[in-house]
Structure formats: structure tokens, C-alpha cells
Length: 498
Image (cartoon, rainbow, N blue to C red; front, side, top):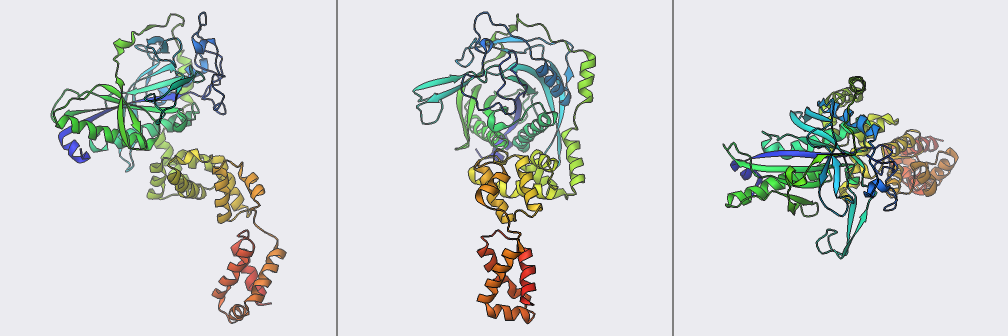
């Protein structure tokens, strides 16, 4: 159904569950290396595990203290109350990537609860999103389905399980139902997740790379007829892995559910899968309620009881809220309203900020992330942050500022960075891209070009300076673009008058 027509008939209500992988060195309940820690991803399957990860008999969990501290910091940043005592629980369900047949999570006694988060939309409108809870838990392993056309279990010949991710520390942030979003509900979902991403990166507790699964969002959507108090049946679209996809998935579910309801059908409470290529969701499994998981207190772990002193210590260390940070950066960088809002809307504010922190000017950082990197990302249908790091972009900017690269050569270096050829300096060396700064070599090329174009030389001497362009072009071609065009122009005018 058309989106506007759907909203004429029904009020959308959304709820968001965001899972944040914490970047502690070890896992939530064992000493196994944490694949979500910086530099730890990409290990061979089933090499970052202990008996605890596999749920082997006799193995016992031990709580990761740093994960608890990270969780409290995140709860505080979300405006939550921190529980003086919280308890872990067993969430029981069977799946091959959950070796012990239950997940250690938190249920009725979470570490953080009752929060409020201000979320700024693209036009500057601020929406306050109510947070129900933020609780600690462990991640499950990962299944790879082999032999099918789609990579999903349907049609696969067999599945492989990798337990490296099993036990990775997570914080799950659950909102209360978000009312009043109306036509902006998809935008609110996107902006909310972007705000969570900005917060956890600022706290330094997660890389929050959605494409790697460090940050995952489950989007709940329901519709109710206009004027009705009772909430409609919700669906939960699982593990949407980009900001753009979150917005698209919520929008699609509103349209899909409206079409079913308007034709007299009913919505099934179920999980759904988002398909990036086709822009639709498909049915997963019937959605379980809390009772189906048979929660009960984890008998092998004591309650978590942070001291008031620890909570205040972590509160005092909180970074600026995202909205305050944006206001400060806009002033420091000297951008106009639209220039700065373009960065915010692109989702690249963190990348630009980190590039500036690495030594680049704000103007140059904005230019490279919003220009070349976004162009390449659009062509490859990926997020710009997956192509290069802020440190790499800052190094390219430094090479340009130092006169070692022209913009044209710098774009070739960026292509090498995206292709994984090494650092910018290594690519310059390997490809032989450094600007020719030897005036002797430039003068030789200029003299040759002037000698081959005597008519152009005469025009320059007659005061028609614009004619120098032909000589400059010939020199740049001879130097394979590895010359500073401004310096070549100076030398051409000097030689023409000699």
C-alpha cells in the first residue's frame, strides 16, 4: 500500500531493540578472546573459545568486570536509573549456535532501566525516546548455511557453526513503544540507532560497526486503526545491519501491514528478515513471548551490586551528549547550517570528527568523506566507513597539504586504500605517485613543450597568458599527472619571458 495512504488509515507504533557488542578483551563469562575487541575479528572459526563458550559439563561462568562497567556507563548515557542490585537469568531455547541450550541474559532485574534519550532528526527536530531497559547478556554463535542460493537455511544442504562469537558481551537496549512518529517513524528509527552508535563510540565501549555486527537492530512495528486505543499485533524485523536499511525496513513493514489489514487480514506476531537487495521483509518464525523462554535466575552467578561510588565515578566520566557535541563541532569547524547538517544526515559525523582529530582540517575531512568516499560507497552499495579509516584519510590529506600529492594523485591513492593495498604512504611508494617537485625536471619538460608549440610561446609573450594552458597540459601529460599544476604555471610564465 502507498505509504501516505497507509498513514491515513493507521497509526504506526514502533519499538527498537539495539544490541551493542562490547569491545572488552575477553568474553562476558569466560577468558576466551573477544572477537568484538578492536583487531580481534577475522579469526579462524572455533579458535576463540573455552569450555564455557561451548557449555561443556562442569564449566562455570565468571562475570567480566569491565563489561559491567561499560554497561553502567551506557545506561547512564541513556539517562537510565542504575539498579543497586541486578541479576542474571537463563533464557531457555534450543538453537545449534547456542551450545548449552540457554542464553545468560537479564530479565526482570536489568542493570539499567527507565531512561530517556533525545534524538535529533535531519531537520533539527528533537524527539525524546523512552528507554525501558538496558540489560547485559551474551551473544550466541554464528551459523553458515551452505549449498543454497540465498545463504539462508531454506534450501541449504548443510550448516556450519562457529562458536567464536558465543559469549561475546552484549548490552541490549529496549525502548518503550514510540508513539506519535507518524510519517517520520522510519526516520526516527534510523536517527535513534545512529544516536546509540554515536554514544557507544564516544564512550569507547564498542566499535559499533553495523556491517560487522557490532551494532544490530531489531525493529518492531505495529499498526492500529485511527482512534483505536489497543495496540496492533507487532512484527520484529531482525538484525537490520545499516542505518539506511533500518529506515527502509520500518517503512516497508508499515506499508505491508496496512495492505493486509485493509483487506481484512490479520498480522501474525513473528520475526521477519530484511532483504537488502529487494527491499522487502520475509517471514521468519513465530515470535515467542517471555513465558516461552522459561526465565529463571542464573544459579551460577551472584547478583551484580555496583557501589554508589562506582556509579558516580562512571557518571563523571561520561562524554558530551551527541546533541551538545554536534553544536560544539559546528562552531569549532566553522561550517554553515546546511554544510554541517549534510554531514550529520550522511551518518559520517564520527568519521569526520576522527579524521580531524587525526590532523586533517575540517574542510578537507568533509570533502573526502562526503565526496570521493561516498561516491565509491554508493557505487559499491556499502557504507563509506567500511572503505577506509579516519587515520588513512588524514594521512592522505597530510600528503596533499605537504605537496607530495595532487588531488588527482590522492584519488588514486584512495583507490589503493579501498583495494586494501596498504597505507597511503605505502601505496604512493608502490605506485610511484609522488609529485615531481624537482624544478629541473619540470623545466626540462616545459622547455620541450614550448619548443614544440612556438605559436603558443609567441602568444604568451604578447601578454595572452591564458595560452599557457596548452603548455601546462602538455607538461602534466608528460609528467603523468605527477606535477603541481600551479608550480608548472609559474615556471611556464618564467620560461616564456626568458
